[in-house]
Each structure stands twice: as C-alpha cells, then as structure tokens.
Amino acid sequence: MKKNIGTSDRILRLTIALIFFGLALWQKSWILALVGLFTLYEAAASWCVLYQLIGKNTCPINDKTKK
Image 1: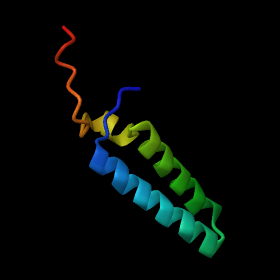
Image 2: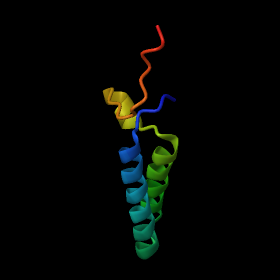
Image 3: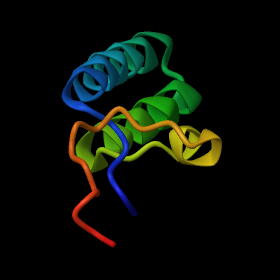
Image 4: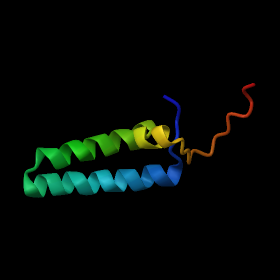
C-alpha cells in the first residue's frame, strides 16, 4: 500500500472516526462503529481505497527519485 493521504486529511479522518464512534455508542449501532473503525484505519495507515481507485494523492512525499 502506497501512502496517499496527507496530514490534514489524516486529522480530518481521525476527527470523523471519533464522531462515528461517539454516534455508535449513543445509538448503539455496530454499523456506525464499523464505519468509524474503517475511517480510523485509513487515518492510521495514511491510505484511502477511494483515493487509490481515482488516482488522487494528497500525501506531500514525492516519488520522483524512482526512475
């Protein structure tokens, strides 16, 4: 997996994950907990499956050294 999420994206996803976990506890919903867990994984791994599918990359690291 190649990192494709930058710092601001990671912070946003972490915030969203915490919101989903809070909603999951409040609503007693395992689906919201799963969405929160997946969003937390994306933030921790700096990787988003949707970004990979559409070719988007917000990670500031360049791979121009590879040729």
